[in-house]
Length: 243
Image (tube, rainbow, N blue to C red; front, side, top):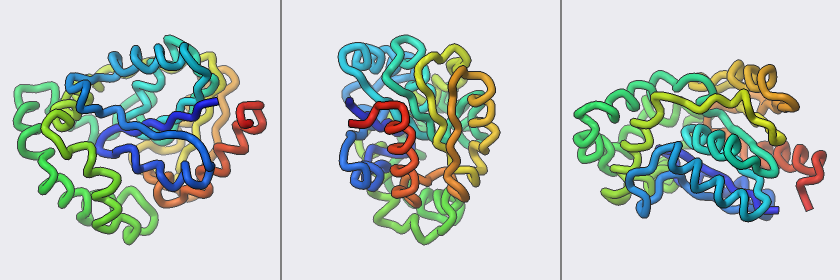
């Protein structure tokens, strides 16, 4: 059984490094791929659906990767779908504003200036950036931010892909028709995507299970990777999806 971890901007695949190390299996990818510079969640969902049809896969998605993962699961049910602190019904205010800018005539300037690695990473390392997405702000030191966020904006094609992805987030897929085994593994202290989003899934999706990471915030895969991994593995074992 493949376990595929997906990250959306501003996070690259290294977001899940510690979780995968704890599990001892799995692979991670970013939805922002320089080979697909016009990516949006619909196109990404189609590509992921083809992959899921070819091989049984547990799809784990965090943050802005959630819409693409939901779209793929609606088109081709994976072995299981795990959603972590991302947009289910609406975007958080920061991503919502970025989506509107990306969809406007300012999108090109956003790619060239704001998303350039120097100002972008400087902002993410600041007290107004990723330090607000964790319990302990010291977790988001310079090296950690560069490792998990740098790859997404490293190349111009990636930056254009970020803008395309953000621009396509104005309309999110409706998860209420999901029929595959679905888990929301949710940091319950997240201010961007509070646990009521996971509660909505629990009420709207048949058989959905909500497992909280107590006190975890938006970046619990980085800050509390062992707990995130252990709770994911427990759920997969209980459903016969871990071998």
